[in-house]
Amino acid sequence: MKKTALRKWLLMGAGGLVILALGAWWLAPAKPKMDFLTVAPKRADIESAVLATGALEAYQQVNVGAQVSGQLRSLKVELGQSVKKGQLLAEIDPVLQQNDLKKAQASLNSAQAQKRAKQALLEQYRLAFERQKSLNQADAGARADLEQARAQLVSTQAELSSLDAQIAQAEIAVDTAKANLGYTRITAPMDGVVIAIVTKEGQTVVSNQSAPTILILANLDTMTVKAEISEADVTKVKAGMPVYFTTLGDPDHRYQAKLRSVEPAPTTVSDSSSSNSSSSSSSSSTAIYYYGRFDVPNPDHQLRLSMTAQVHIVLAEAKGALCIPVSQLGKQLGPDSYQVLVMGKDHPMPRQIKTGVRDNVNVQVLEGLTEQDRLVVGDNALKYSGEERRRHGPFGF
Image (cartoon, rainbow, N blue to C red):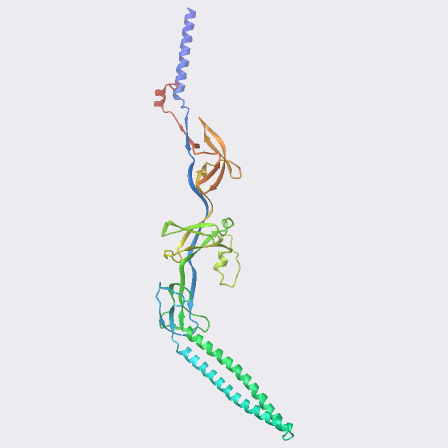
């Protein structure tokens, strides 16, 4: 009887333990099932570039001014007109210059006439000197008369030399007057486009102190981009590097070129070159930039002055390179060497790779990965719900 009771209590205790275990399983959270997110390397073109903002300028620009004073009698061109070298652009009233030429010519004629008169007088004094010399040798003339004749001859020769100098000065004055008369016809110093007309017809220009600007010519067949390169990037770039830029109005069109030069002084010095101070110092809060210049053909004149250019100076590039996201690079193991997680059969495995060109998004993989590999980018723990537990049972089947 006692054995039967003991067995009964043992069975009841075992049943209670089973019930407690099932209850604990039911209430306990399910072990998460790991689902690894992966990404595959891909082929793409990649480049490393320095970004800069620039402005378009004419490759060659000239302020066409007046070298003589007077009224602008006529303007022969219009704004935006294309002109050829030597083409007549404007005319200044030539009356003053014509009068100056007449006066200079008259002075020259007067000096030449005086020379001719002196030459005739010189010949007379030469004959008189020869006659007095012969008489003196024959003791038939006074020595004083001989000395007077010699003095007149020498004096007249000196006066002729002075007249020669006066004639030379008068000839220079005539040439200057002719040049000034020619300056009343203003011609194009180069092929270009009229981009500005500063002086209108009928205005009076005065060139005593500085040459007044009549109009501005620019050669728009070639444009120069002046890009501002930050001090953090300027040490990476040098002349000859490939460069391309886009404009705000046509962001899909790339203009290709090569970097022509990088100025040694910062933009603060270049922009203030007209001032007396040559100091390039600036406060620590002011960003420092250096101008990089390059040229681009503009045969259709689609590029215009002062347009904003979004400039890319290419440091390195690779076509069809095997790339992965920069964010997937793990611990750095050495120069251009990193550790990444690659998905194995059932768990991630670390692997060392060697990298090449990189941009802000992707990096080129030179060694360590293939297109068939999968990089682990994260995991997602899926927790079982109560309904899933009941469906799978307490042991997962």
